[in-house]
Length: 378
Figure 1 (cartoon, one colour):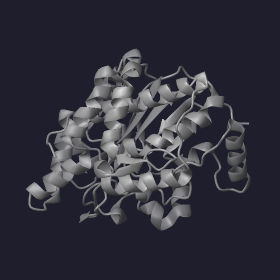
Figure 2 (spheres, rainbow, N blue to C red):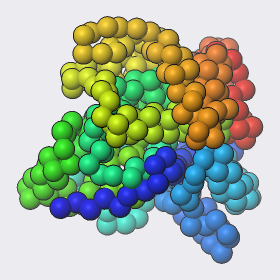
Figure 3 (cartoon, rainbow, N blue to C red):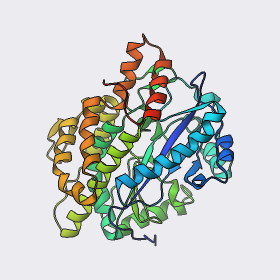
Figure 4 (tube, helix red, strand yellow):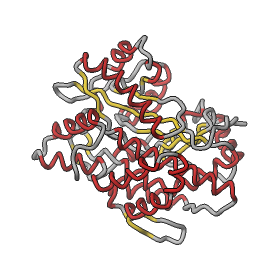
């Protein structure tokens, strides 16, 4: 039996993975241990975690009630991190992948957990030089979790298109808006979740995995959307690393509104649109490839629409939910992000404007992280 610790509906927690880069070269710098050591004794040191690779730090919020609280929490932690990294000659950036770094030269963080992962996954595991944003949204009752998760998969392409920020990989322009999405799913327990009708079906599935040695603990399920029973949340891990605080706020608001709306509808016994697994899988590929230009499958009857039209429709539909949750401005900013262009578009625009110089891309990502807002329209 998997215990689920109920949370207040709509409560939030956000994890933001950030890359450390050398100020002079903009290449990845494996110096996370120095940064963590420099944070010791500071008020928000426990809000910064190590990750699989030592070129990464993860900023983690407390439990928050509103998107505004998330922004305040992350902003305070980011300021403390900068107080260390500025003195070490490091810059910060967040994107699904680094445009030109080589995976072969990256150092794995010390620890048995990471060593075990690398031993099992080998070549694919070593290639996980990727970054994401994870949004936790609280749910009050575990019996509704499977239905909410199933309904949320209908919105996987909406979130992936908004958060796509990995068009480059080891100096190559991949032709994908989110190359990270397809890289990450190569790990044996990553990618799209299975769809369960009841919590008991989910428990039986986890029991099968543990009995057969596929996983040893629940967090080894690295799905794009997954229950986090110990926190009482659904964790949405769809988005690439987001370069700016403004984008984190927009995506968090959209995610919070979607989850709360779905949970309320399931509680009232109202129908929730769900898609068969083959449509969910196809939508993921389409938005990984085409980003905000993707045409997605919207219902089981095979209706197809442009993903940006669907995003606009749902932002407008969710406006009353956002007003109740206190995130109207942040939800509306999703439309600003569409107008400015998702990060993958801005990165490609910087690359082309600089005549194919990838340093211009990293320079833009560094600048956007510092300013907190996109600095270019694509």
